[in-house]
Amino acid sequence: MNCLTRSSSSQYDAGRHSGQHRPVLLDAAIDALRIRSDGVYVDGTFGRGGHAAAILKRLGAEGRLWLIDKDPAAISQARREFGGDSRCLIHYGSFAELGGLADAQGVRGRIAGILLDLGASSPQLDEAQRGFSFLREGPLDMRMNPAKGISAAAWLASAPLSKIERVIKHYGEERYARRVARAIVASRQAGRLPQTTCALAALICAAVPRREAGKHPATRTFQAIRIVINDELEELRGLLAAICDLLCAGGRLVVISFHSLEDRLVKRFMRDHTRVGDLPLGVPIVAESMRPRLRLPAKPLRASVDEIRSNPRSRSALLRVAERLP
Ligand SMILES: C[S@@+](CC[C@H](N)C(=O)[O-])C[C@H]1O[C@@H](n2cnc3c(N)ncnc32)[C@H](O)[C@@H]1O
Image (tube, rainbow, N blue to C red; front, side, top):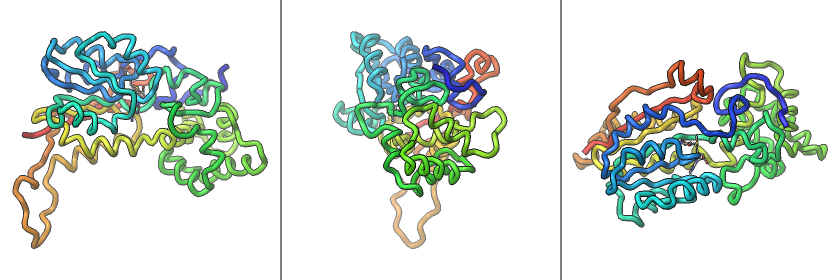
């Protein structure tokens, strides 16, 4: 059942396409990885495997590709499609676990490319039962991995008002965070806390006094709740902290992000590692530790007008690439 059909932006353009996931910035991402046929690569966000299939086309028999996703439906698809390909290693879990996986396989410092196509996939957004979309009536869940953590409904039922407000303000960048948080807590105290996506969307619509042009009023709050439920920024931070030790010299990190919070993390990480920080006064320094560890081989890239026309989900996508220096 559809709740509302107002236009919206970001990944919540879900209403405009079917459950089929169409990879965003496919050619640009594959070019940016500069794939060597015998390299070890990681697709940290397998989804439905659009990028992974393109990487595999360029890998020879000696190449290896890690397929990682924390969504069991994505992993089932990976097993069905690539389980018989001896070049593939499939991991059901978070890309934040890559450091441990790399150590177990003895490839720390030997990975030639890591791709992250962040956020939710079209099937996650489009399947009402997953509870991600305010456009489709479903249980308020929003977990990418339904076997881990708590659902959005359980979180809203137990989080203190101040935390709900903080999350909506910081992760949703919602100027009416206080009003939305108060409306949620008031409904909870009255024993009418929304249990479905459309009920929560209706509550948010009633709490937000002014509408942004072209954006559904629930967009920001749904994004915020999804981020906290899936620990999205912390997991990204965790992986970024390990990246320089995981990549080989010349190895590349390619990240496609869909909102400013994740892009800001990636941008700052890349910027901080492409330059040498201020020298600490009076502290002896090992020259090695003062070298930049990354370079930026290309400018950030957005989808073309044609791609946006044929796949509206690509509208907010931004691709960044960094290369490990020797
Ligand atoms: C935008 S989709 C990727 C689509 C994919 N590139 C394709 O072509 O089909 C993002 C996927 O990343 C997964 N994901 C998000 N955060 C993750 C994390 N921290 N660890 C593992 N998978 C994650 C989601 O479950 C989702 O399937």
